[in-house]
Length: 606
Image (cartoon, rainbow, N blue to C red; front, side):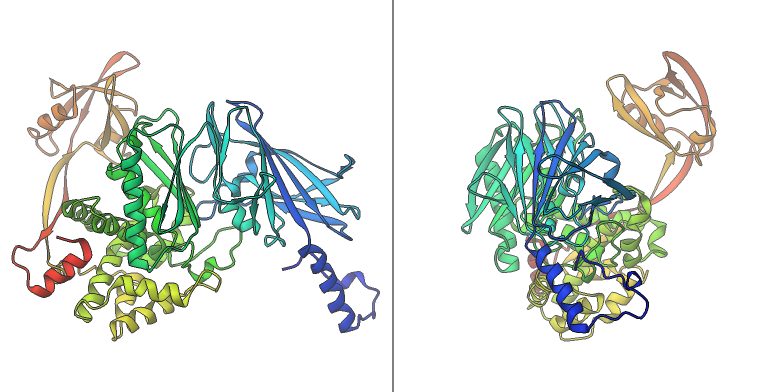
């Protein structure tokens, strides 16, 4: 890559440069760029300030007339165009001694600065930090988070330049960044990509420091946990389990950053993987007090396993990716779905969840797939590509969730490998083989590489498996595959009455939170936000009341509902529909063969 762009149309007609001279000019320009350094400084003026000020200093830019800088359109790992530049304002450039330099906006996220032969320039801008999500910036009264891709301008042709990062924060605030710190207190990154792969916590923080296999591990929070010993033990078990499965730890340090979501009482977790850590947003604020809470364990296990699958082992498309547009790969099912399989399996092998917990996760994914019509027309490969179409990172907006189906295909692939090798080899062997053949410093794998490596492990051709269940839309042979692993699967139709609305329990009562416009409720005089007070003349105070009344109703028969809207009662007549779904049950076979039991134990223990 080079910031220098040779434009022959600027030369007089008929003028030709000797090839040696041209190569000398290119080398000279690249040498000047390669010696450049980039220094960032982040300022948060006061607690509660939702704006951060960024200073970017670029030094050793010889013979430069113009310089382009840009802000990424998305955050790596979160496959959604966020247009971070919409939060950037007041961008100015100047010389180190304060002389202004002209700035021209080139597109929605790129600016061109007239350097005027300066050897160094200083760029200053401000950022609105008001979106609390693992892929964005947010600042609150006592703490905040900064995500590199949403924060730092970059040189489109100079992402390989080393960078430093310093802070100016309110008194009593600290920083937590999974980067090495220099003698001057500034963090150092070997490149822009390494910089934005290190999420930043600022504020009044507390941390637990310990080690696993001589690697430094840190858990950073906003207050001391009630059970620090248990929290360390849970994280240690997860890391140790994956180190055993994958043949060691790929990092020298790892930082688990946990930041509570402001004003969110519903249980919720959101994590984003990074090479040497993860940023997790969660609610409620007390959730981390229970280090054995399944919601905490699953998000932690998922993100920790990404240190291998996604951050070191990557699809070919991730090897050299653009930051100004979508990054398409058909392998997200492997990146995310197989990681989800390892999250549940890893927790089970670590003894942090029960075998029935693992079976319940499997049952949930199978139930989702059995009741999703899109599974018959959308392949895993297509779903991986189409994730950008939703404009949101909410997986419920996807026609086919490649996390859940990818989880199932990962499980079935593991069973297939073990069945073909008499349980001598499985998905762990495939992962270790891929990590060996496609290390982080080399181009990543392609779809055909997955097929070849899996076939080599199985010592037989597995291309039909990938053609049918990854590239194609064939129904997964789940019952047959699970039987080979000593697990039974039972599918039964379940018919229920449905009004077409979603209810949410609130302090004021049951609220109609969402209405399907193509449902009986959508055709009735109901509105989202209505409080349900009575059904068929019977009072409704809880979900249990509603379910009990629902069991007494007949399909398509008119039912009067009373709701409270703007403190006034409103009556609506609705005809509930009979909806049939498939209910899936999963559990161990009572009398498995030795071969079935061996595979079952390897997958999820007894």
